[in-house]
Amino acid sequence: MTTREPITPTPPERVHAEPVYTDPANAAPGLPLGSVDFVIVDVETTGWLTDQAAITELAAVRVSAGRPTAEFSALVNPGAAIPADTDAMVRQAPPIGALLPGFLAFARGCVLTAHHAPFDVGFLTAACGRCRIPWPAFPVLDTAALARLVLDEAEVPDCKLATLAGFFGARTRPCHRALADAQATADVLQGLLGRLAQAGVRTLAEISA
Image 1 (cartoon, rainbow, N blue to C red):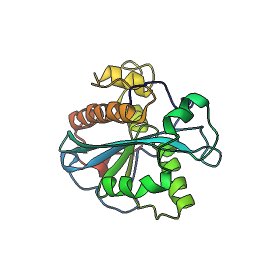
Image 2: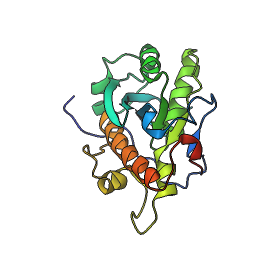
Image 3: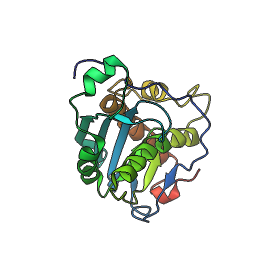
Image 4: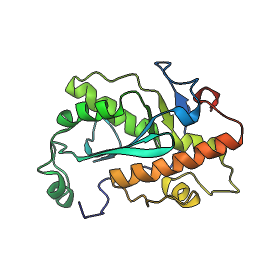
């Protein structure tokens, strides 16, 4: 893909009520942060609500031992009428049901991470439900909520992805394309983990909202 036009409107920045880190499977809370494998995911969608919109792009970056090691990226045919410019991009793409098994295999054994994780994870779990694909009980880390925990207002005016990417000198500029935004979030995550280490936080279990 060469076009860099946004595929989805940007949801309004809002106060985050969800926890920074959730681990329903009790999979990795005691591991040192440097030993945790993260999969940073981003979805682009036709809207903000899971019951009214669909995924048009899905991407993820796997980070192991603090370094990106693999990427997953795919356009998605939402199976519904969408604006013509976006439709031209995704018309020949597979439906989400054909892509979810590959994504879930890519993310297996990792802490699923996203900026405003309830949005991305919400769309992925809804898609799995519609496709009758079991959703694994991933541990989930939210970089937006984590940023609010470890950064103060004197450092950043807000915790939008673009703001944090600039603050931490991310190598990729977020642009509302799934892979670029996942790459930027991966760099933001590394910056946030560095701040946690400076504060003496060594494991996921020590992160609290």
